[in-house]
Length: 248
Image 1 (spheres, rainbow, N blue to C red):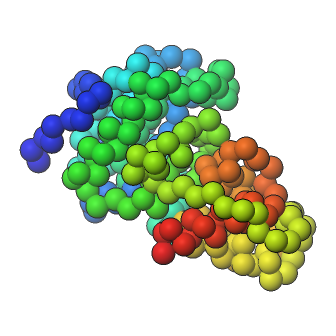
Image 2 (cartoon, helix red, strand yellow):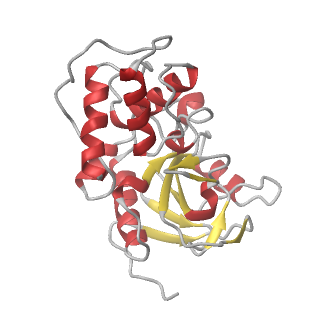
């Protein structure tokens, strides 16, 4: 595959990782992570360590440098046990982008402007080669909500969507009381069905159980970061409905 010219301000640095294998299908999803380590160098070293058995296709430093670790046509090892839009094992059909940030364990902080600009440029570059829908640009917390919370509530998903990458919607709160764990009925069933249609692994049961709380929290972390409590209040439900309309 011939390389495509990069879009400024991205600076691409080759840093090959041995941690990959063959793909069986072309990528149709982009998964964004934060590194969750104390330094970018520590993350880069781990992603290139054959003993670690983890990798991503790209790593984006806070100063905007972009490291290419694994060719896009190869299968990197970044997603783990995962699900999105009916598909499991997202390593098979995704491109993984690690974004340097200490994460919640080591001092979670906002993502610097040069880094955000580089992520936007990288997404545009990747999508110039592959058919990746906006609804398939997701976070690690979306595809593995029971295990992961990255890239977290400070990640500027709205900014990415405004640049043309990913989904974002804001809406007036829907009528009705908040729905939370322990409740049952048609409203819960409709909520679960909507989250499943968006992409999450949440077969509708009509019972608001612990799994539903986990998925609602993941949804809020991406699409309603002002409130992450696992309770489907009117605004959370309204944003879900608006996103489903965008992705229809």
